[in-house]
Image (tube, rainbow, N blue to C red):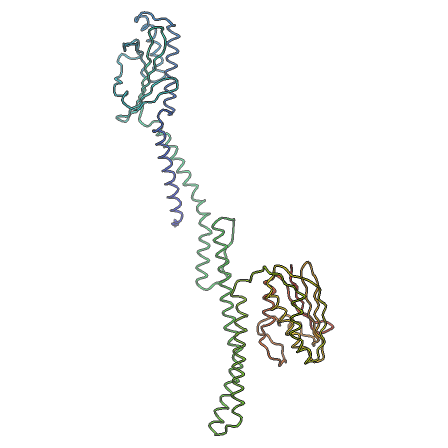
Length: 457
């Protein structure tokens, strides 16, 4: 099993944090010697010895021999129980009683680290030769007039408490490191999936997406990756469509220009220049047509390549449709078309006004263009589920069912139609309607042909 570098970084960082925390705790234990549990433990032991001795002797001072005879057995028993040296000295430093024949030399202790408990007990510590020694002394108020000083000396292996603490920390570290493996794998798994998806995208598979789980930073990275992948797919798809559509649409005018050029060359070669102006004018018209076509193709492609427009405007739909119908008034008069309107006074909020205008301009343009002279164009608008519904109807022969959907495809032209156009108007209208989360569809009706646009509020 290959160990990932991310896991190693997490593991090493975790171990360093534990190590630093252990060193800090260990340092705090040694810095605060006066608050150490050992000092409180020593305090309780010395006070226990003091209380038992005072109970044994009473309050009055007797002869040294009698005190030694009464106290010595008690100190020996306490020494065995507490595993310590215990002795008592008088006010002049003389030995009153002891648990052992020989008293340890405590001269070096008094110059070391000192702690004073709340009861006035002084506790010293010393480390040497792998051992740790603690020495405590306390001067009581009894016997009356001859107070005793109680001494207690412990010697045990060095770092006794610290070793247990460090062992516990070591066990905790090992357990934490074991449990860190599945945790780190869970963190690293989405990153590996993201890496694999990015590698596939690099090979051309732009449909790659990652599954989003949770709301952490990795999930945010996954969302950013998916948004990037979706944007790239749209851009590449739009670029491919643009290339294919341009090559398809430009082939016909280029072919006509090539024929005109060949005929022009033949006329010039034969010395017959009559009619050459017609060929030149025809080629100029084809060039103008291609220039306009390329412009419309580029504008159509931008709908996919760019981010959706801001939806923060309010459109007065009645005013907008009235302005557009006024622009087509001259076409209606020239072709003797009857225009019928039924427009409710509605406003559409949270939309892109220019996008709405493009939608209706393309639909009305097709309606007036494909209506035979003497026909009728009707526009009806009313409120629909808190949104707007617009129905544009024009007199036209019924379309086959498959054509009702195909008319919204880019560059699709109705068969047997010689009316000029690029076939991009309704395709652009459909894209903009989808941006507004609306719906557009076509249907045959008694009056002819109808396009219905529904845009939610």
